[in-house]
Image (cartoon, rainbow, N blue to C red; front, side, top):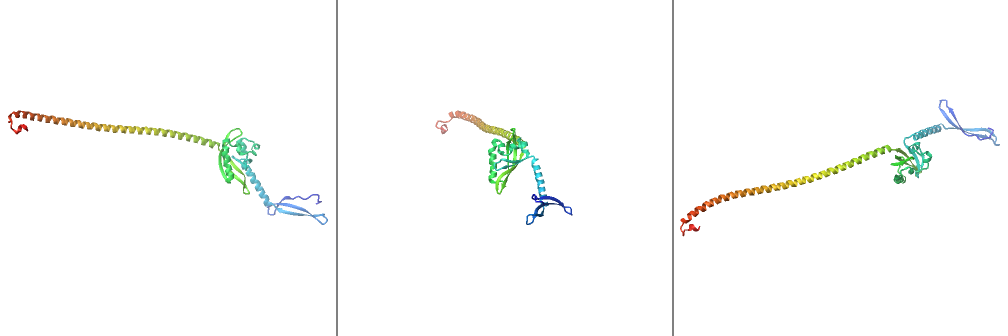
Length: 277
């Protein structure tokens, strides 16, 4: 009231007759007369109860959010447009072995396995260029101690005023699943190879069987042809025997006829026509 300093605003808690608690923000100013002498004080009381409640709720929400992020089992981070780490939870250090100060400002591509960097860079460049809101990619990263860790990463772009300024990601360690997938793929490839080999063996056996059946068919055809020839020869031989028997019998008849004709010839006169016939 002596005017030695300005009065700062402050807050006070009040309780209404009905028991409701209020928070009032109080602003006070000196009242001066024409000679600038302080003659009083003017106070403005602003009800900030709802704002305070909202602030407390936001603080609790932010505290809960930070707790959830910090204790998540996945890596959660934000990066700028160049892919440099800006914010990340403790899981990043736990999985990769780097201290927080070693990751801040570092590009995520530095952690990707060298042979995968080009395709990873192209993949996220496409997302930023085409403004794809959400993508998923699996890639191998190298921890500080040289271990290989496979990550499955869900990435969302961050926009401000319609301009892409970075991205945020949730990255999960899928190394066990990837190794299991490798084992399954290896077993599947081995099985497919065995199937191919067995199929080739069966095809070869089928080809040999087909050739053998064709050979047997040719042998059967040749045998049938030979049997037909033998049967034809036997028929010819039978006909020959029959013809020989007939000729023999006919010769016997002719011999008798010739014998009797020889005996009758002297008895026939020279002028008889029977001699010439």
